[in-house]
Amino acid sequence: MRLSHTDIYAFKALAYLGTILPGTLASSDAIAGATGVPKPYLVRLLATLSGRGVLTSRKGISGGYALSRPALEIRLSTVMRSIDGPLAALSCSSLKWPKACAVQETCHARGRVWTRVRDAILAVLEEVSVADLVEDLRQGVDYSLCFEHLLRPTDLAHGHSNEVHAV
Image (cartoon, rainbow, N blue to C red; front, side, top):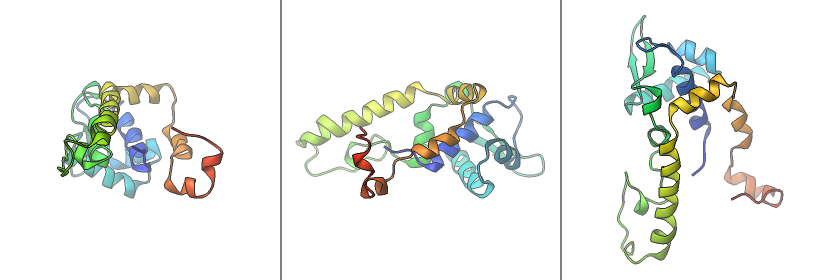
């Protein structure tokens, strides 16, 4: 599992939406202004999160976006699945998008590695909620700094693997 720009933009938008008063809506302009997320990108992201039930939205002059439930009830596992799809590395080990494999019942790697990795990632993401993102925002944490730390396959191709031995 790798984080993407989209994931970080979602964290920023959700943290901001977690700070608005319940029952109020924030416009995409207000969210973009508060988070620094480019508005064209943000609008697509908000539509995805609304379509997946993470946000509620209303169109029109008095429209906008809000969290669909209290921030404490929205788990990062739900957010990540809404944006990226399955949390599993392989479809044969996915809980939400299973695709059977002819050897999955006897495959050592599936049972001993990939389902355990999926379960570990899921367990951590289930422990963290949008309320935690809101707390970070209130403490002055800016997820924009995460952009400098995103791992890309091209990093390995350019010799960065000798500099850091990442797990």
